Length: 490
Image 1: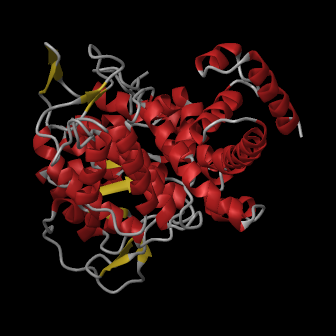
Image 2: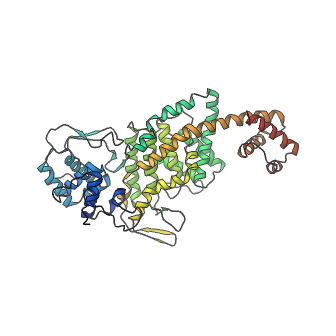
Image 3: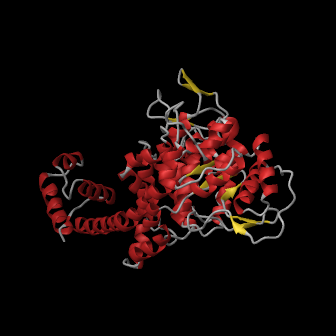
């Protein structure tokens, strides 16, 4: 059957845009992460599944219109096309032919906004303003009027850096807008004293679990300083200096004082590459755009989990430091939740516990984009050094993070309704067990805390081996287990 591609697929083929390969929809038959995959689409398939009529001619501007109508806004395509002289000329002609067409005005705006250069066109004559993104289909930022195009730009981000999150059925079902209600429902079941006791406990749990994800423990001083950083999250805007400070806590022995100047990558081992990150000379510019994205989100009414998903995912893909990026991304999640006042001051949602419980799907979800970027990046891995041959700056600018945001929202929901209450129940039981043991045994505070920890970690019993290590007698171990059974069985 003769191929007859349209829309974004036609544009990609017509202009050879490797940069947009990663955004091809699943129905195109593309093989995600397969370098050089022959991605194709047939006219009959499109007509059958989407009832799309092919443009009357091969004008690229009309293919762009079809793509916007039927496949949605993919900013990366337009960033790649916006500086192409042939595409710009076709857009100019198409707009002159239909100067008030909503879809052509969007194409026109995207070309100028992303390239920073105007087309040879007069300003649009007065017609009603329309929004670029349909707010029933996308999360959006407060619109900014473009008088020249008679459009309201509500894309998340700026021309330097954008993000897309679609209101898919799966994300809508995760109800990101209701997170505050869920946390309040849980918090309101506790008294003020319990909440006060829970604050430090939850912060400590988050710190420990975030380290466990990376299979790295914190020293005592690092643990304390990271706890303090979590308690400050959301109280002031996130800045480059903030990130460097947190990174220095995470990597106490080898802190970094600026963004990386070397190439790094994410991989299953030192011999494999799952994500070839941005070349080091691009990191400063990408992070400047990322902070503009952050400011846009901070001024929006986008739900906290969606903000957390956008910021943490895009940050980890840029990978601006040599090490510690994963833990920083989870700090950024806490910052977004705290800034949106999801919990009372001093309380931290133990999100890392939820991620740790679903660690495989965490990596699988991040890999949905990583594999696509890897598939279009030419690189050499030699003697544990990675050399990126592709100009890959734009690979990280305009990501659609709908899947990751959906996953993270579901994790946070489970943390709120399951893990958070369980953690507080554990805290209350630990307090009660400590008090009962303190009355029955002549042990120091540190020894009592150790006993409580061992009991809770071992299904409510202190093992003989742990008791022996603490130099407890068989009678003392037996008494501890009797008390534990009584307290924990209530």
